[in-house]
Image (tube, rainbow, N blue to C red; front, side):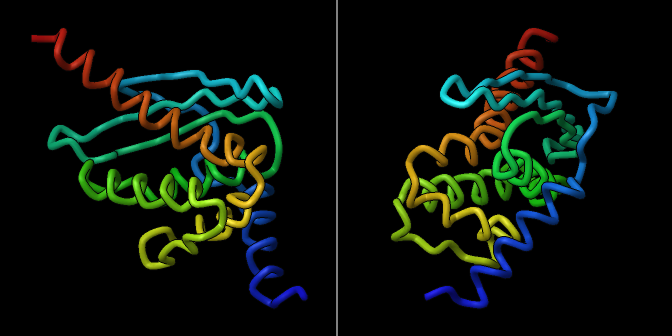
Length: 153
């Protein structure tokens, strides 16, 4: 039986896929990473810019691949821009935990916003990598930005 919530979630994913937030690589940036999902060929190039105090100032990206991976990048960037690194980490950890739960963790819409719409993919292990690719790229960009900050002094 399909619920109205399923339709809403599908609509949210479709909307983020067709009208992605923060798509298009922007400058300036502190770190740039490129990830490829070898299973399906999805790709993302993600740029991260942090504020001097460490908050996420900007995330921009170019994503090629399925609707789920593109929508995930849109939702993630919308959720994390403007957040402190601690807040962004809390959101990222909550999302990754829900995605790895195989559907047992419904996620908190107050924390995850539109990204709760992606959690249906948690029941399909082949789709989890598609959905998590942008989030893993964000984490890699943080590591790269930290490494560059460390080498600047």
